[in-house]
Amino acid sequence: MESRTFVADRFSIDLGVDWTDRTAYVLMGPEEHDLQHTITIATDDDAGAEDLLAYAYPQVDSILETLKGCRCQARGLTRLDCGVPAYFAAFVWWPSDERRVYQEVWFVLHEGTGYRITASFTRKTRKTLGPAVRRAVHGFIPGSAPVRSIPPSSPRT
Image (cartoon, rainbow, N blue to C red; front, side):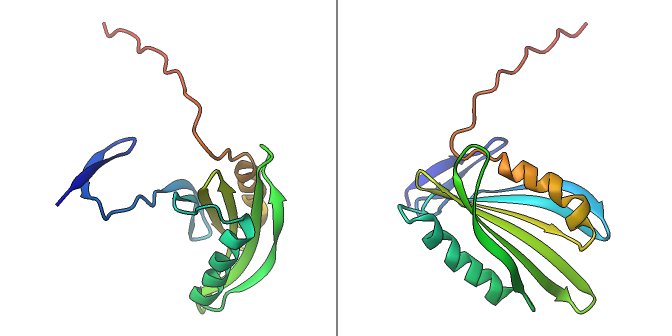
């Protein structure tokens, strides 16, 4: 069996050629009102040459079909601060009878790579944390990350 090595920021693993990279980044935020807030950024290198709406619509439909009692509150085209178009959808759903979750999802398609950025909130944190999360998401820059220079470590004495 042929293999290839997948290399990430903090590890590597040898895999067979039939494995596909579907990297997802989970950025942990505060835990408030019994909800661990996160921003999840999932990448899709096989998004192909589809247009943004063809990329986003099936995923919105899948969310509506998958989440218990889910309904879409808002959706439409928007633009990131860097000028790249995005598609936004806001959902409310009930994972249990006593728990309501608000989920906001942005879909971005850039140079053949798809990005799905998801953040979840409670009713209250949608108003308190939501604006900062939305600003962060609108500051998202798809594509190659800029090279950062790492300052030399100070010598130990």
